[in-house]
Structures are given as C-alpha cells and as structure tokens.
Length: 490
Ligand SMILES: *Cc1c(COP(=O)(O)O)cnc(C)c1O
Image (cartoon, rainbow, N blue to C red; front, top):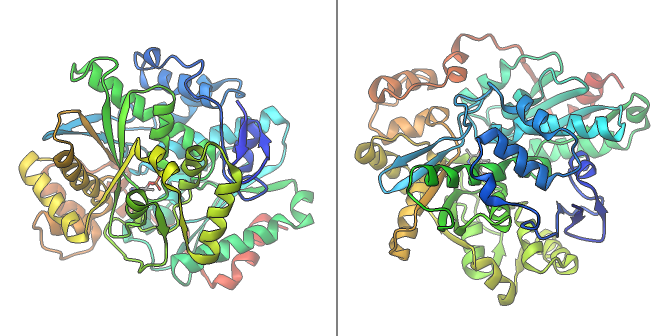
C-alpha cells in the first residue's frame, strides 16, 4: 500500500511515511487505495484487542516485518486493562475509555506504538542514525511521547512546554519523567510562542551538517504522522466487537461514534475504520467553544479568523486542525491541486471554502455539534448525578453533543462516545462540577474527588506528588536552538 502526499505527486512506502512524518511538499501522507480491499473486518472483530491491532496495523502498514512483535512490545502490561480500551455503558450511551494507558491520556494508545514503528522502520531501511524527537507540548502529548520513547534504544526525546502554561499535574508528570534519553525544558512565553520557536529550531538544526555528521536525525511525534493515526483505528473495531459480544448489536448493524475533536486525528481514524468496512453510520465531531470544525462541517466554510477561547478542555482548543487535510483530500477524490489551494487560502487568508459536491461526501458520514463551557461543567455534574459516571471535560463535551445528536436522530442506533482523558487529569473543573470546594492544590482536589466518588485514582497520577522533579530547566525561547545543540553535543 502506497502513501501519497495530499498536496502533490510525492509517493512513498509506509516505512518511509513513518520515518518522514510529513511529505517534502508540506502535505500529509495518506493512502489512496481502497482500504476495504483484502481486509476481512468480520474476522477482525472476533479477535482479542492485541490480535485485532496486529491485523489492522498489518493491513494499513503492510511493509513492517513483525507487526505482532511490535504490538506486543507496545502494549503488553502497559495499560490498566488487558483489552486496552474498555467500553462502559453510561445511561443510554456507551463510553469507550481511551485513557487507561501509562499517562492516563488517550494519546497513550498511539504514542505507545509509534516508537516501535519508528524503530522497526529504521532497522528495515538500514537507517543507523539516532532519532531525535523534538516536541512542543501544551500538556498531554509531551508526557505520553516521553513515556513511549524513554529508554528506547537509538532514540532521544526533547520536550518543551510553556512555563506556567500547563496544569500543575501535567507539569509534575513531565518534570518527574525518568529515562536517560529524555530531556524536558520549560520555555518562557505561551504555547504558541513555544511551538513557533521549536519549529524554527527544528528546521535550522535539520539543515546543519553537524547533525548528519553526528549520525542523528530529527523527527516529530505529533499527530500528522501516519504511525500515530493507524493505531487509533483499532479501538473503533474493539468498541464494535464489544457491542456484538454484549448482544447489543448483530454483526452488520450500524453504530454511531461521537468524538471530542481538536486536531481531527481521532475522528479521522474512525473514518479509516469505516473505509475498511466497519459498519459505522455517522461520525459526530464534538467541539468546545473553539467550534471551527463544527462550523466547517455545517457550512463548508473553514474560518480560523475568530477569537480563541481557553476552555476546561484544553486539548480541543485548536483553530487549525491539521488532520482535516486528509479528509479533504479523500473527499475531493484524491485531488492534490484543490487541497493545495484550500491550504494556501488558509495560510494566506485564514479561510477557505469547500464546494458543495465535496461537502456532500463529507456529510454522508460526518455530523458536528458544539458545547459551551457552561454546558461542559453542567454535563460532568449531571452525568455523575444521574448515571454515577465521572467524566473529564473533554469527554463531557462528547456526552453533551451525543444528547443533541440523539435528539435529532430519534432512533435507537447505539452511540459510542470516545472518552479521551481521566477525570483526575482535570481535577479543578471536575471538582467544581460535582460541588466540591476549590481549596487546596490539584493534588488535594484529586484526593477530595476520590473521597466523594470512590472512583480509583490511576497509579501514575497518585504517585506523582511524592516523586522528585528531575527536570527543572527554564529558558528563554531565543535559547531553544542552543539548548538542543547542547543536548545533542553538536
Ligand atoms: C488530543 C486530545 C483530543 C483531541 O484529539 P484529536 O485527535 O486532536 O482530534 C481530545 N481530548 C484529549 C484529552 C486529547 O488529549
């Protein structure tokens, strides 16, 4: 299966796609083959989660020699439950819990697998460079990436986060990260400053001769890499398989998924599952107050020229949603010219408009609704009181949107809401929602939530308070380049 650029004629195999991350023309790498060809989805849903992962990943990334071994090394004994992503019935919906991994973030599902894929791709292509992952994070990606890459031979990871711009829990998670190949550094300024400076340093160092002389190559762990997207396809099959096992549906019945969305990677993986044959009716994109995706799906106009809101679901506070480009490419009938035009309109004007003919294809599967900040907090409270289930603010956005969606559909097709974070990662809004006083720090809030609800605190979070921070560097953003060169010894 070939991967090709969304913006031009560049093509490569999947090993190269994982190592590159992005196409040389700036496009994203995506397969234009018929994904259902040669894939027996019915046999996939009869398997255990790890076997299912092996089957699905071997189909999407066929050039890897030992996918079974890679899947085992990525996931075995690393998640709270053997089935990785359990499905729980909550009221009239199903919740697919994606946060049972080593850092209690849904990004663990993909970032546990990515290092294995990169390592294997290097080995198979004879690439002997040390892979250096350079990442700017607003909180969750950095920690999950370090957890995936720490002590993986032949790799090194450097994470930058905005000083004061992440939650105390997220800061503690990163500052206490162990591993000889890991470096974490706070940067003065906000996330955008930090990300822009890291991107600049990335391209500068990438063009330095000293880098290749030192046998090192830079890479990134963000969600445009196909090696991060492919592992996310698996849990859509897993959820379907669970509903069949519980006799809620028969094999072949359609179901709907509601996905709290930011960069559009999670929901796009659901689209791949549908293209592979899984009986999915609608994929419902849930937005918070930064509802650029909801407006796009409902109007065909993508307009990022709008106020940016800080919400209690920060991983969805995104106005440029990078993975949408892959959907646009597929909906346009794989036409790199129109995609390039839309993307250049977006970067020069901040807006692009997609023709009705393509929007029709998109709306055959995608629906979208948004949820306000007030509704988010109310939903955490009402779901807890009515159904005894404690959800985090991102999941709450999905739960509220699922209610709006069901009201409109008026049928009983099962709805699965993807749950993307543990409520204990966002103790302040959760405390507020369930009527706990907001005194004390986040660690005190975690204890109070646990005392009131009895929901177990994930081990990786409860042990944080007593761990000693080992990463205390804080730098100006002008010094990122020097910092990286110093770490790399070039
Ligand atoms: C990253 C993230 C999302 C958004 O996922 P996308 O793939 O970027 O759409 C939602 N919730 C949480 C908690 C996340 O970390």
